[in-house]
Amino acid sequence: MLRDYSQITQALLGTLFTWALTAAGAALVIVIRGKQRKLLDISLGFAAGVMIAASYWSLLAPAIEMATESKMYGADGEYVFVPVGVGFLIGAAFVYGTDVLISSLGLQSPNEVHNIPEGLAVGVGFAAVGSSASATFENARNLAIGIGIQNFPEGLAVSLPLQAAGISTLKSFWYGQLSGMVEPLAGVLGAAGVALAEPALPYALAFAAGAMIYVVIDDIVPEAHQSGNGKLASWAAVVGFLVMMSLDVGLG
Image 1 (cartoon, rainbow, N blue to C red):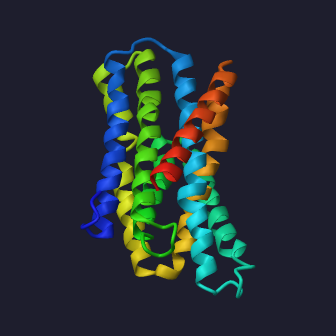
Image 2: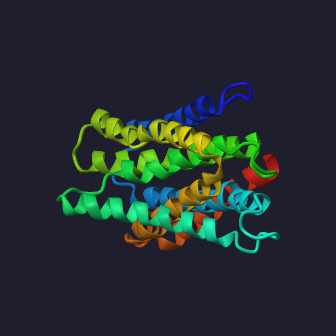
Image 3: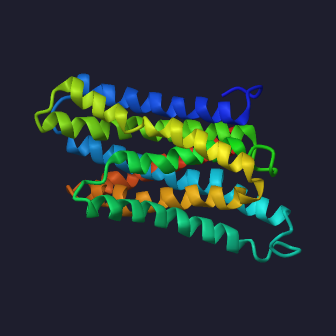
């Protein structure tokens, strides 16, 4: 994630980093054994908090700023809610539609579907650098760091239940890290697509935010609350939010 590289290369490096932290989290299955449901729910809550904070500071705020500065949505940006709202809605609908499609095929929705918007977010974040005052290299880097941080417990949240279900430790690790493998592809495609159509940047940033918020509301929060550890998960979400906010505000 160095400044001198192209935006697409930065997106690739950033998403390889997030994948690596997913694998590192999944590798904890080697030393942490048993169901450990409380640990999983805390991890899920933390991930939810990070994703919510990242959705605003690293995605929605730059999208609003870009749309305002473009002067395409009113002289004073009074209609910037249109591109941001449309992108946000389409992002949420994308995750919903993908889940429905996979379910209609009789398959359980794989975790890779939920990693797609995370990869897109990092890719679009790097592609947006320089497009507005808040779309900086530092913010894109912080977004990659934040998603990587939340991917660490996410990798464990995939591998640990598999091990508890009787799957070997090696296979549990493999499937855990596999959940993050799609992020480099999504990141590169997102960066390349936006580079070819710069006016689409506000839509793309809001798309990634909408997809991540939908995942938090529809998947992560319900799962974290279903085993009686809701309060712990909620406080973990608060901590995750504060960590990501501190990254964006303090290191931006």
